[in-house]
Amino acid sequence: YSIWLDSKLRLQSDPILILEYFLWRKGYEYAISNHYDRHCLWEEVAQNKKLNKFNHTIIDQQFAFYQADGLTRFNSSDPNRLLPSNVPEGSFIMRAHTPMSNLFSCLWFNEVDRFTPRDQLSFAYTYLKLSRMNPGKPFHLNMFKDCERRAIAKLFHHRSEEKHNIPLQATE
Image (cartoon, rainbow, N blue to C red):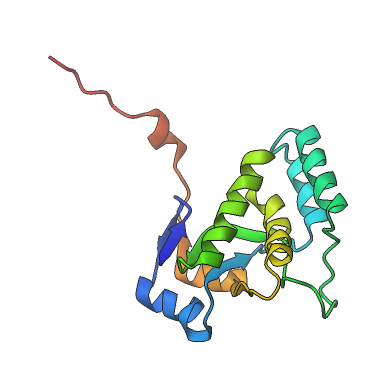
């Protein structure tokens, strides 16, 4: 098992209790929170471009590729939707190291490496791809509400003055 935290987060609970709650209790192999604000990849693409998070041309290429390969707009009322959200908040991930979990992680990394480091853009497509590649082999994913993440992992902002005002020690 592993728990991955963004460098700005600190756990506020016992890691064993976290694994029990998010993975073991219902037999999940992977747990990640949905995004606190956006659930549709179309919105996430627009926001990434608005904030200039990455090269717009590459984001457009990635997005067009995913649409051409079957990724559709998120619809929360669709009973056949694959995920509770198509956009994760990737700052806190728990996983059991199972074959399906490892495969998902490798596929997701490959998408991040192929297109952009904006992992939210490739998450839903990776899940779709994994589901298509492995019919009959379920991937037990727990995509939980972001408020649960905030309850167990506290955010600490990096202080810019600490980064830039590091005293240098004299060497002899």
